[in-house]
Length: 274
Image (cartoon, rainbow, N blue to C red):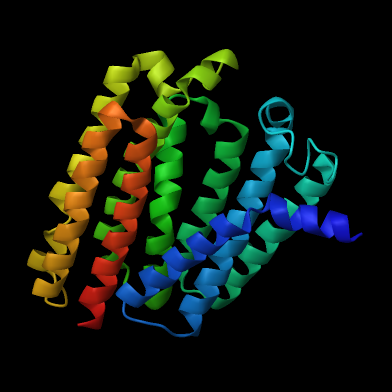
């Protein structure tokens, strides 16, 4: 029983769920609130992320049997049916909390995200670029969701766009990093379909777009002053370095891009605090 419970917990990838919850909390804070609604949004995001991870493992059971035999389903510690039931329960819990406690805009974002999560796991992840875009959207939408829960979604739109663009670039760079293994498995990732160079050009363009967009809150909102501009400037430098390094070492580049997003989050939190 304990082994099954541990496997069920593992299949939700709690680390990813915690990061999603943090994104919603930051979005709520940037949106102007740290109240109960933002806390609920963070919990909903964690539940939805866990549900998405479980359903993703359900659909990928055969692939994981080859690439990741240690995961709960291929290792036999959790059945596919168990993963499906767990995913459904988490989805229902997330939906109920959203509909009962959060404002209409947050409900709309939450319901749409649940549809994208299931669609990605079942179909979109196998489509070049479309799957990358879906992951990028979901990564950024946590901030929108938290902002909507706080009633200040307008303050998080740029944060959403920045996160989505950077994650799009990072996802493509990760696909370049995994080209050899994906080719062996017959996957149709963007660099395998477009070619490595074209894929990297798209990744760099996405990151450069995020850098170009990042100063916008300073010029649009009075709440974002010089402190934000300085902090986001540091993030932009790290982002550009990550994009540059991706050409020579995709593994290093995508890790730098991930670190840059943390710096960008700090910039938005600093701006709100000041």
